[in-house]
Length: 191
Image (cartoon, rainbow, N blue to C red; front, side, top):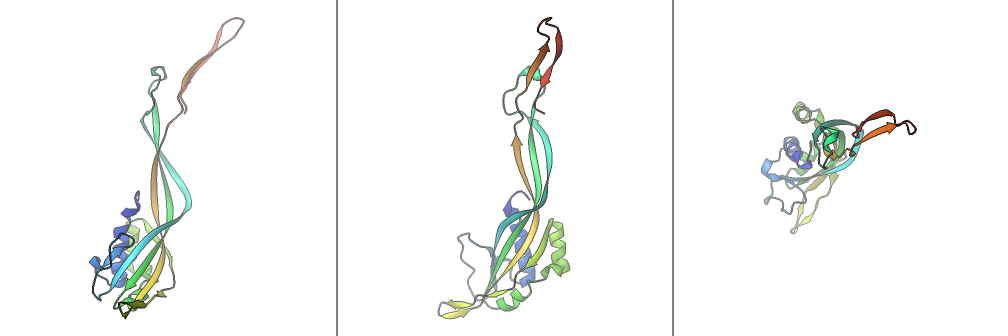
């Protein structure tokens, strides 16, 4: 995964499967959209990166040099470095309206369901744990609106690519001062 938005369809599908909410009633939070109207079960979710986990691996690819290079140095390249690491995320799921209490009950331990485990595995993601569901039922428009929240701790492989400009090279020659005899010569190209 190179962009956090690549994960949103996966989490939306997981939330729909676990809670039974319709796909058009499960929305990404903090997008300036209001919740779908009516009293049917609705959900919002927000994915927040927490930390890297484990150790990274690096892949180096030679790419054409960005900076001008002395032709005497020969073929000169820079690197595109791709760092792969595991990122831990918190997925906050908020459930609203009729059926929210039952739906939130289905979220903890949802990773043991074969369909959810398969979806996670297919997308190189995993599930660490879930929080205890919280009852946030509140007065809304002169009536009580059922609201529940549960946080999932998930992980996925993340890739970051960045350029490394290798140091400009130079030619050198070492000679004996009294005799001017050449002892060594060569090129340094930063690698």
